[in-house]
Image 1 (tube, rainbow, N blue to C red):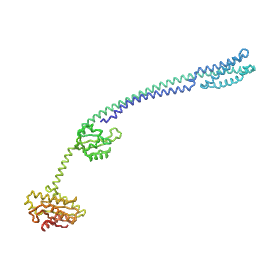
Image 2 (image 1 turned 60 degrees about the horizontal axis):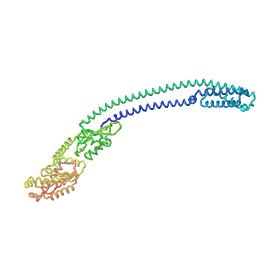
Image 3 (image 1 turned 30 degrees about the vertical axis):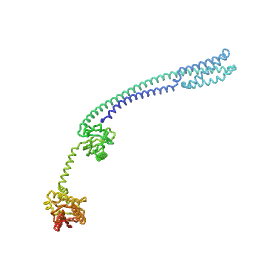
Image 4 (image 1 turned 90 degrees about the vertical axis):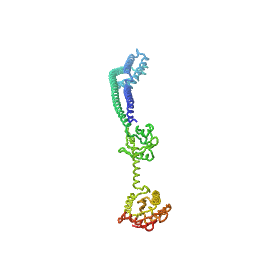
Length: 524
């Protein structure tokens, strides 16, 4: 598993992104310059110089003056030399020239004050036009004709003045337009140079960033390879689990322990590798309690490919490889199978030793040592809680004669059979049956009253009688019988356990003196 794939991916993406950004930056710059050009052209279109050539306007005004002068000359020679048709034609030509000038003025303003003078010219022309019918009918008065001729002379002067002013104005505007276009060229060249420099700087920054990232990636690759070797050569097994307990990484040490390949373990649920449902529950519970501030350790059983159980000591910690807050668990698994087997063998040996120390080997019930320890604790509890306690000392009648007659082997069998009957009498959880010595036994009944003790003892004698164990050397009857000394009472500080045992021995002595095969009961 490569822990730094994200870095490699970043370098790959950075190269692509850098190329895209450079291309995008160039396109944006070119688009911006294109928009600037269109904007300038739009401004230029709004400028009258773009729609109407200055020469056309000057020519129209010049033509207006010429037509005015020609009409003046025609009217001045009327009627001797001028023809009415030619005068009418001249009227129409002058009218047409006036409309041309007016049309151009709508799109291209004249120089300052020229519009006022043009307005004077138009007003005078309207006055002249009023006499057109009379002129064509030759009914106009001589004085009116003289006045009209003078007006046309004034109009010709006005046209010349407009022409002169607009020639100068047009020259100034052409000069300003040339300066503007030169400045525009300078701005565009500067914009392209600046854009080029910005692209170069941006490319250098990206290239430097890529180089730094490549150095970092090389260092990370070296570090990854080093830690990969450490992980693979580690003495402990290692796995990494995701939030769903799936194995996303495992080293060769653990896979060899489980006798499975790394590929077989990857994506497998760790809970399914547990040797029992109990261990699966322990693993899940412990990992759910895990947080980033502390680790959790516990023992767990896993099964290999053949189902054989292996014990591991597992130390778990949270890790976040990519800094995204992903929940991953890094576990170090130490094989403790051999140690567990030794511990189990040691535990079994200790249990055997404890059993040997506390139980009689022949009868398989508690021995006198265990009875003494248990009786002391039971006595103290009874004194503290002030609950009744009963105890019975039991002796097999004429067992020595039985042993001499039937032999020691048969005597041991008899002891075992009697011990089982006595042990069966201790039915409750805290009751205890023990071999007190030789053919003597003892029964301890916590929280048992005198009547209850009598019932237990009587049932014990009845159970033994049902076995019908032969004893021809007994003077009581031809079967094994028991003599019992029973004591009962509520323990207190005024008496001790030793005194109670002595009292039970005294009761047993009474049973023997009274003919055996019976019990005697005393209270303390």
